[in-house]
Each structure stands twice: as structure tokens, then as C-alpha cells.
Image (cartoon, rainbow, N blue to C red; front, side):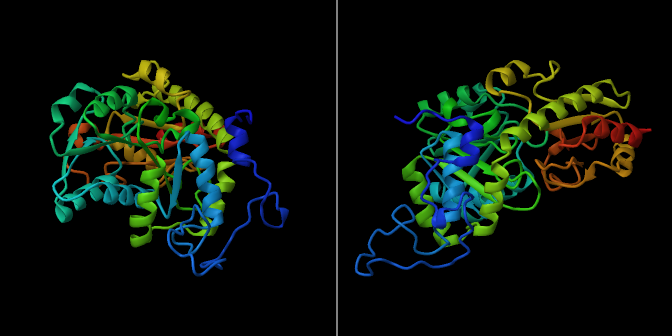
Length: 386
């Protein structure tokens, strides 16, 4: 039996197969739409797993990305998409029908919430948003029509954590699927499938790509569900990733482990700086002892990662900070080598209903700590506030 390989080795080599075209060491970009069929009389059942027919449903470069993600998350199968939102929407459209019920945590990415509301209005899907940081709330929300539970952990943008194992145990006792958006943590920090989740989704645009130059998404699930998604939603709605973007994500994935170590190291330093800053009211970072779910973070995550949320003492301080940073970039998105800072209330979660009730107020700031020297990041934040 082949020995189990480490995270960094899988990130770089995948399965380690040496049958690449032209004996290329690096995965080639198969910039191609359609493929020759060996036997045109045997079309029945042709899928990407048996070969390639058309790049909307399968392509060698896409497959190389999928295989690495599958191995890193410890799943049976993976699919690559044009974006994280394409991965989420394709999964839900495959799994749900009219009058089905979803339970979602109340704190999720703004565009995911918009998608859920669209499903509710156009497909008759019923959705309840609850606080899943208390697993007992899930028991009270389950209905006969409930089909799945969806959440992010850490949650965007408040950095709230959810106990994956506890939620999965309750969900499985009622026959429900658990879908976890693992974008903030990445498989380097957290592997939801090992904790009982059924489906893992990433916006690969973020840490997996890591350089802010490619948009993509991935789904990891059992083989049967992945087959269903590929043969229905991916094929019919066409949310496929381009071979070039898949290749860029493969290239980014090769350094994911080493990047996450530096993101984590830098974020720890920035979080501790912010805790001592007089204009900052509170800092929410999983590996700070002040995080209300710090014990869960230590149990569920291997490190704190690169994302920080913090509350300023005044709206004026928020405007001063975002208006005066020079190294940190005021911009949406996250997980890039550059430090990105944003105001969720007016940016990523601008359309979010009743957001102040769940901690997304005008004093909240989210920072994606990059790979710059942490002292330079801290100096930039300090000078902006002064």
C-alpha cells in the first residue's frame, strides 16, 4: 500500500501519477473544448470519469485541480466550478425541490444569503436562519421537510465558530445533509468531512488560489452526489471553470500550506496589536483567548488562520482607518497575498437584512491579513488611526 503523503506533498504532486502528456512535470493547461472519441458507437454513459467529451463537464486540467482538493479534504470526489457561488448554487439546485426546507446559520456571506433568498422566492424553498453556534437550536428548527443544514465556520464576517461535529451528529440523527463552507479555514486548518460533514464547499478564489488572479469554486462530496451534480447542474447550468483558471488554482494550491502558516503567524501578531489599540473595542480571532469560542477553535482548527474581525469604538474611527491605510488595500475578497481590509456593513453585507442584530454593525471591520512583513501591516494600521 502506498504510504500516506503529507499536506504539502499532496498540494504539489496530487496523486503523484507520472502519466502526464509529454512527460511534463507541471500539469499542462489543456485549453480545449472538445475531445476525440475512441469509439463513436459507445456513447452511452460516457462521463469525465471514463474520459473526456466536452470541457463544460470535464477537462484534464480541471480534473488535476479536483483530485488535489479531494485528497486534501479527505473526500471521495470533487468538482471544480467557475466560482464559489457556482459551487453552492449547483449543489443546492441538485439536492432541493419545491417546498424543501434549509436551515442556515444566520451569519453567512452576503451573496450566499442573496442566493438563498432567490431560491426561496423563485423555487419555493423554505429557509430558516438560526444561530448554530448553539447546536440545540438546530433540534428546534428541524421540520419534516428539512433537507440540509448549511453554515460557514469561521463565519463571514464575524468570525463566529460552529461546532461541526455537534451539528453533524444532530443532523445525521434526522437524515439531513450537512454542507460546510470551509473557505476561511481551508483544509490546512480544518477538515469538515472528518468531523461528520457531508459536503464541503470553497470559494477557491480565496486562499486556494491565494494570489487574487483567478476565480473558482470547488465541491467535495461522496461519489454519487458529485456524479449527480456534474451530470445535472454543472452540465445544464454551465458553471464550469476554465482550464486556465483551474491551472492558476493548481499553481496557488502548491503553496497553500506554507502560505497559511505565514497568514496565521501574521494574523496572530496583528490581532494582538489590535487588542491593545485604544480605538478598538474588541477583536474576534479564533486563536485569541478572548474569542468566546476559543476552546472550540483549539479543538476544531489547527491554527487561527488569516482572518480577523474587530469592532472600532466609533464609526468615525472606522472611516479614519479605511480612509488612511496605504499598505492595506480597502477592497472586498480575502485570502490573497496582499492584506485586504473592508467594511462589511457597507460592502460584502450591504444588502443583508437585520444585520445589526447579528453583529454586522457600522463599527465592524474585517481584515484579511496578507503575507507582507507583519510589522509593516501593523505600522500601516497604526499610522492610519493616528
